Length: 136
Image (cartoon, rainbow, N blue to C red):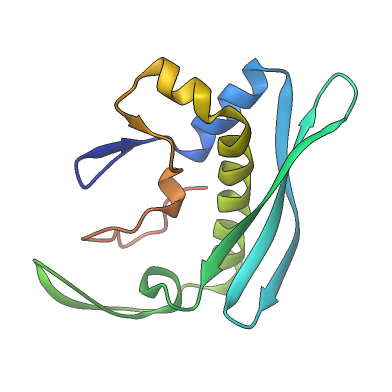
């Protein structure tokens, strides 16, 4: 996915890399905390179920794309509505999965294409955010 002129890997790409290395990523423990919603991502080896890595995904109340509010950029000012709770929780899970895969497999992304960023696409903000959530 290209965001502001840079290329980023989406969650499906991170999951594909994990699968190629015999791993599967999942999320658990989604919960509302003071400043947003967090989820725990885990990466397990398929052959024996061993936990390889874990990471936290988070959607903050300070993110207008998810919690609503005004954004200002070169296009002007736009007011965004709050997204439904299920969508915010799903994005926390998506970010957790992307983040745990990134922690284990960032080296693969730069071997594929050194112009790809190792920051998961779902963690990026948009100058001109889409009206619909990024598919998860």
